[in-house]
Length: 341
Image 1 (spheres, one colour):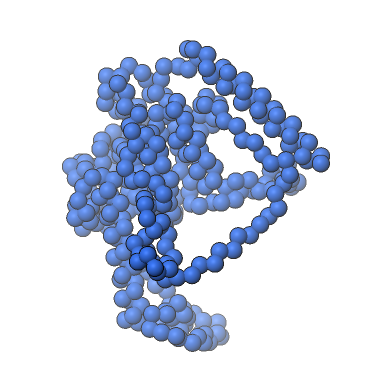
Image 2: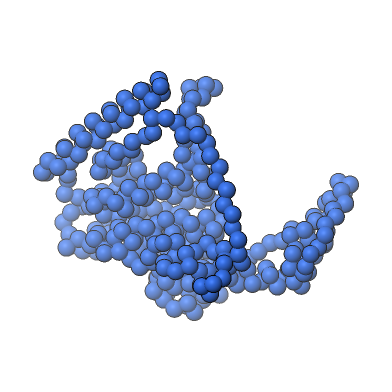
């Protein structure tokens, strides 16, 4: 009861603050005649939970949202905020894989679908970096930059000798040629079946990357695949192949974007913290009673497939919807409300 009363007071104070800011927001002339952009900081991986609040060693409350959910929440707010013209981001110097890069890029696709302009700045980049950049309407690269898109690779590790030195003898029952998960513990090299599977997986990953690049940059898939064969590419070569849009240094971004049109409104970059203070206010009503921790159990049945196409009478497990757009989001750009006319 004490927590419920305390949380109700916090919610009422938040409601009063939200109402006051909304009323002030409607006053004519309060907003400056500018073109607001939010400077995003991409999450360095999929951190789902953060540390709980506390003072010194004393902790109270549950764990806060991780960087990934905070980032996703910010994107949803920007997508629904008519005040914001677009976002700007730089590729982080973080170590994460292609799957995480594709997931972040798909979240940025939401902004494109909502009509926001998405601008990315690259100094230089690998395949993972360019996948993140492909979510942008406009890719700006430093003039001396290069694309080191040498293609994809896979590594396999075999541990029987290491286990033998530790006095461990691994024993597994092999149920088929393509059931190779235990081979790393029992074999010195890959079997032909394992090499065949890894080859198909590598080609599938390459096709997925090429299709995304081709769709975002509006080039043919053959041209998209050529960036792997002809790497490294200079900024000038990348621009000639329509892989980037502009060449400029990071301190020239605003001037470069403003020079595109004769619009007299200035572009203003906001950090997420500045946007929280200056942007359209929002209201988050929190539950009065702390929800119990729950675990969701999903029962999956069917053949694992990589795409959504399937016969109607067949059960499959797939990361995409059976029908409709990939992940429920259209891949085309929105209404381009950011164009200043």
